[in-house]
Every structure is written in C-alpha cells, then in structure tokens.
Amino acid sequence: MPIGFQAGGHDETEFGGADIELGVKYRFVEEDEQGWRPQAAVYPQLEIPTESSRNGLSSAGVDVFLPAWAQKNLDENWTVDAGGGYWINPGSGNRNYWFSGFLLQRKLSDALVAGVEAFHQTSSTLGGRASSGFNLGAVYDFDEHNHLLLSAGRGIENATVTDQFTWYVGYKITN
Image (tube, rainbow, N blue to C red; front, side, top):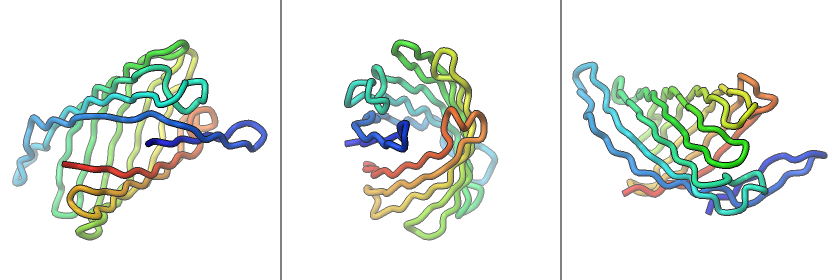
C-alpha cells in the first residue's frame, strides 16, 4: 500500500495514502548485443488514487502514462536508458503533460545496481510550470523476483515550486 507525504506550512508534514501504480511492459525490439540496436519497449501504466485528492497526495482520478523506452547495454556493467511519454492527467485544474528521462546505471555486484537519471516534465496543471531534475538511485535484488528500489534527487528547473527534494523507497515484485 503506497504511503505519501509532503511538507506543509508551518513545518508540518502530512502523511496519507498515495496512488497505486499498475503497468505492463512489452518489449517489441530485442537488443543487438554485438551491434548498435537497443531494445525498445512500451510500458503503459495506470495510477489509481487510494484517497481523495484533497489530501494532496493522491490524484484526482486515474492517471494514464503512455511511454516508450529504449535501453542499451554498453558492456557487462554499464547500461543506458532513455525515453518518455504522455500523461493523461484528469481533474479540475490539471492538464495532460509530457515526461522524458535519461538514465545511466552501473552494476556494482550481482545483487546491486546504482545509477543517475535526469528528467524533464512539462506543466501538469493549468498555470503550472515545467520541471527538470536529477536523481541518484539503486536497486537491490533479494532474488530474481524481489527487489528494493531507492532514489533521492533534486529539482533544477523551477525547483522552489515543483520539487526541491524528492525521495522514493519501493518494493518491486517481478515475474
């Protein structure tokens, strides 16, 4: 169950239910390991609110992300990913928007991968601002199906109104 938080006024922090994310990745191009061709995939996702959007942590409705991603292994330890897509963002005062990103990651051991990413997003609200930023992160594989995801980052463009500092902790189950 996702839990979100945000810093409120007067040094208050609010906690509550956040959105549940569901997605399916479909790879339609396989990587040419000896050549230049990366693998390519689509990864449509739904974000389903768990509470009212009045809490500031959940969406006003079901958000839909329609991205395309490409990935290329540079060698046995380095990987680069890039892509982006279109968010359908319902709700009063919201607008649909674009998101793009770039990731460079390195395999540190059989169980641990670390990386850095940069991203850009157009405005998601009427009268809102675009944002850009970066994150440092890691994925730890407990086994082939259970993974711990960690990320922390900082906004660069319009950071004072979009995302001065963000962090994420997640648990991922794969098939």
